[in-house]
Image 1 (cartoon, rainbow, N blue to C red):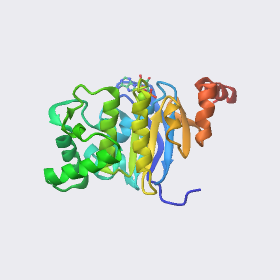
Image 2: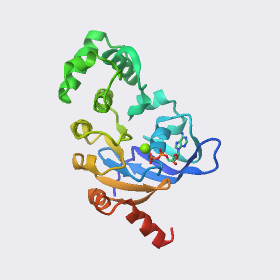
Image 3: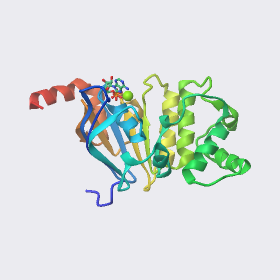
Image 4: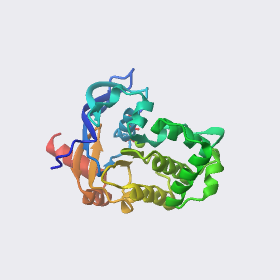
Length: 257
Ligand SMILES: Nc1ncnc2c1ncn2[C@@H]1O[C@H](COP(=O)(O)OP(=O)(O)O)[C@@H](O)[C@H]1O
Ligand SMILES: [Mg+2]
């Protein structure tokens, strides 16, 4: 048992689309402490991305019941910007394509918002270069326009640079793009591994087990139909890889759940 105060506590969360009856998240529960890496796995449509979007403050979802505490504060009442300032990082909170704006300029704004202070461009550029170096990325990346003509791998690189710069206490990474090649997966994994620390936690959301070959999670959770149905350590991911999601579904059916 971890006696520390949780970083993230999700309690009995029920979420649906505003004009639908059917719930997507059905009593979802999760507790994350600082220093931990959690992997959230599940078949397509189980609600993984919906959870990430609700944590980000996406306006398209309705929370009808439950609560989310971040550092003991009610996350659901915070604006997306406040969430970032409080130390929560979700990659897709940021625009997909911003023509004409360079990565350096875009990141400087995000950095200033996160730390609530103005940083001169030259000073920021030095900081950015340090992060690029740590992630083994080329300095020329900073001068490119945001997401314009980015490959899947470059988008991931951009996310990871943002994560590194913004020094979140909780980073939520949704591996929506299952088409990521091995190099892109390694960029994500190296970024997470380089940033692992006792003060920071990660929630790595993934359908496939393969990224977990590079990131060893402390906990693995399997989500089916809007809630976690099974939790374990890294071995659970390997078991899933071997037996497939039907294994969990069948077990649930047998148990009459
Ligand atoms: N904005 C949306 N519009 C319509 N359906 C949605 C929307 N968001 C989620 N859903 C539905 O909710 C279910 C869960 O989706 P999602 O959270 O994306 O699952 P996962 O990320 O686990 O694949 C799916 O059936 C999906 O079609
Ligand atoms: Mg998804």
